[in-house]
Length: 232
Image (cartoon, rainbow, N blue to C red; front, side, top):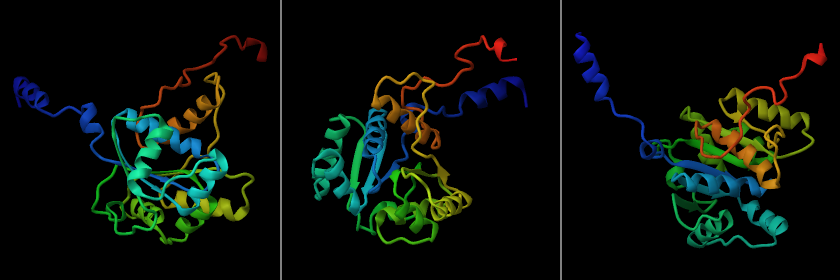
C-alpha cells in the first residue's frame, strides 16, 4: 500500500462527532433509596449534553420524593417528563422519555433495543438483591437484567449505610456479573463549595463508567501541595 493511498483511507474514516457519540440512549433507573438529588443531577447533565434518556422510576420512588422534597411525582408519563425537566432545570435540550414502572413491554425491556448502557442512581439494596438473584418483577429490574445479559454496561449507585454481609455479597454478585459498583461517596479534593458540588462528583464518576464526560469537574491531576518533603 502506498503512503498516498493510506492517507486517503484514513481521511475517509468517519470521525466520532458529538452528535454520533450521543446517538445511543442512556437508560436511567431511579429506585426508592434516599438521595434523589443524584438522579436529578444525572438527568440535568445528560439532557444538557443532548443525550436521549430513557427514565424509569420504581414504585417506591414516588414515596421517597414526597419524603425528601415534599412534592408529588405524577404518575402519568407525559406529566413525569415535565416534572423531571422542571426538577433538573432543563426545560429544553436532549430527549427525555419516561416509562411506567410496570410497563415490561417497553423498548428498554428488550435486548434488541440498543443503548449506551444503564445507570441506577440511587440504587436501593432491595433492587440490588433482586438483580443479584436474576429477578425482574418490574421494568427497571428487567432493563437492568437486559444490560447484563447483553454484555452492556450496568452501573449501580448504592446509597445505603451501613452495609450488611448480605448487601456486600449481593453487590459482589453483581460485580462478578459485569456491573460497575459506584457507591454514592463524594470526594473533597475538588474543593466542593455546595451540596450540589458533592452530588455532581458522584454523578460524574457514575457517567465515567459509560465513557460519558459531560459533568464539569475538577479532576485529580497530582498533589494539591507538592511540598511533601517533610513527610520523609
